[in-house]
Image 1 (cartoon, rainbow, N blue to C red):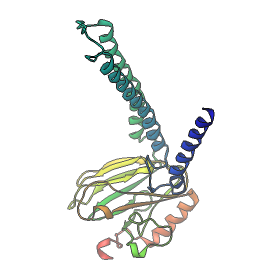
Image 2: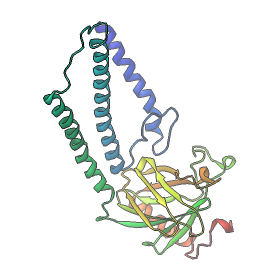
Image 3: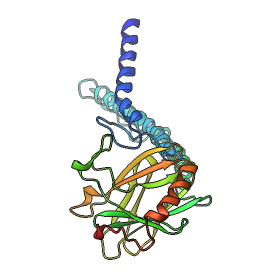
Length: 276
């Protein structure tokens, strides 16, 4: 019996390692055979994962309990095993229990839920702001805190991809941000366009881009690297071709990029996709 238990434990350890190996190596993007969330690239996403795991075990325990209870009732009170049915119609203790226990469970879930909801909307310590505008079908970015650097980010076609660049996620120009900074994203859509949604799963951000409205979200990336997302709103025939490529760099590298970008991207948006 001990040998079998050890074997089962080793099997599940191997299975977990196998399913998460690619996810760890390919941080910031989906992987083949992925079952859960992408690896957290920001503290906010880690909080979301932790909350999900917490609620998951509560749901699992409730599901198992209800299943066992139903199985017991089906067997114990079947016509075969219960020749003389009970005439009991009320049980005060039981009714109090099945009222209070769900209320307590909801309170236990609500406390971390409210804390997470507050953190998702806490804009008290913002270090820089970037504006993202959804067009049909690409993203435009503006850095109002850095002399209004403006550029468009368009998908790289499959036949133009370089080695290591993921299909349908790579763009010609990347959104460059510094690590360890609270970055507020102001998100909107072209006034003459449709509703889009700016979403980066590994950072725990997803916000609709609505014409005529300026929505806000924020993220903080802790490690340099590439992080990918896509438009997650059914915005039209080009919906699947609006990727988001974010390159997180050190503060020194970001300062260097800003100086280069000031020369490369003019404030009059002369690199607009319509002019490419």
